[in-house]
Length: 94
Image (cartoon, rainbow, N blue to C red; front, side, top):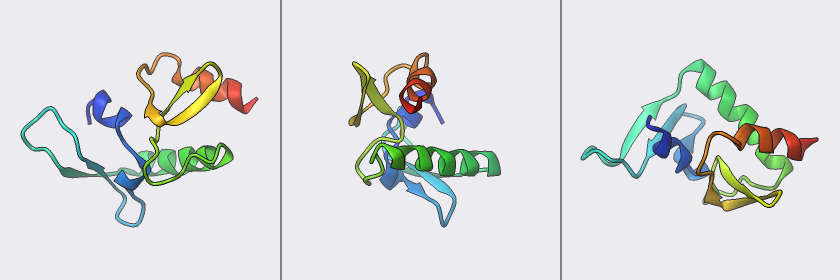
């Protein structure tokens, strides 16, 4: 998956039973496609889901990687840069 495809993932794009991602927007003509998760990706999604629950950010239309602006998580917008995403989540969790 491309970085932009990952950033655009919403919770409705995750199928934990089938262990797959659905890519709805793509730069290629392939468009809508399903991508299987490997074990590491599945474990990471489960951990990410647990963290998102702490911030009430697991509604289907919300982004997996929400924007963090002025110290507040905005699940209605996706994170534009990977550079600060992890640091912001760790800082917010204390």
